[in-house]
Length: 537
Image 1: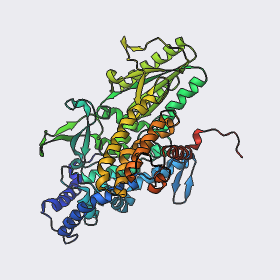
Image 2: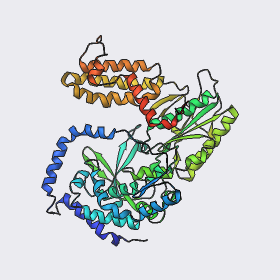
Image 3: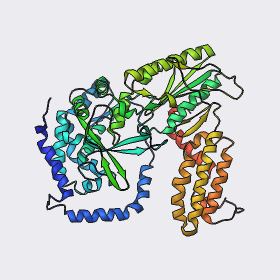
């Protein structure tokens, strides 16, 4: 169904109604805008105190999906494919009836941020005005989801370049973060909630570990390391190709993405919604320099998915979803978002050479067809082996270009070397932990224990905990424990010869070995299906 701009007259007027709260042109009786400003100021005062509570909420344990594919309805669960399709179709056709309360709940779930879209409305103001704006929001959301269209006014995004790493003057070293309109955020979340079947019905490839509920970087690291160790235990040769894509999110072709959505079942009204969502989007760059903002002109976006809310990652997962099926018959892909790692094992050097060259060819051809660019400068190969294993001297290439070989690689924050030794990772970790010790020593003279623990958690504990299930059983972990004892003594004001045995329980902090056991048990309980048991009794 084709809808013109006039179809959204009421919806776009609602945006002007909301914007009136910012510029003062609207003066509704409820809620009182002065009261809203007062609440906003109060929130800013309490924001620092509440920030750690937000962190605790965000650190809640994740839940994995049930292994049985089913759809829950008002009459009970449905497991047959035909009834599931019928129930899902009825849900999408009647989705608009559930929007009124869903819109309120969606806005209430927003994080309290001060960042603004181009309409000048922050989440703080939106949450305080939710009752007054509920009717226009509900009407616009109903219209959008029922007729498969998207308001033109909501297609504008302010882009903030966020520095990643490398040369600060090099533009590829920045990540574009889109600041979207308030109504656009609501519509995106509602459509994302209606796309959960992509995960629950296992439509997203199991080799993809990024942006998936219940799956963490630990799952991806485990898959990679387990594949390596299994091959080495079977006395096979194994090599890895670690690809780096240049601006993957910004290079996604809209036409190819829409074809992918249709292939995975998003047709009719749902397909039209994504088509209108991607068509004629505009953005402009905002650069802040010495407190003054400069901006570019508005430009039409012809490629890429916005990085700012939930639909961008989902659209990228769909765009790259069929890559594993292209190569998993000759290799083991491990993909985290746009990071593509490919492991190839073989019984001899000739077979390894053939299989990895075929994997490189199929992978790069797939990237080329889907208009994604491989950064050869950051793409590496590694030939993994035991210390007693023979060195493999062959090299790998693509179109007569030799792919760089490395002895170690950084994979999702962990440093891996060709012997699967954790020495390099621990050597990189120790200076960061030493910095945390310096911060605690500096702050200890005028901070109490609770404040020092607040510093300890992000600056020391987070680094210690990450990936500990993989590296703590290595010999170098003793050095980490010595640094942990040093920082505990600094926090309690103890001298260097004081025993730390009573200090750990006093502070409520686990030793590194205890943290290793706890993290290992937690990983096991969340991923029982990855392991085999000797007996079912």
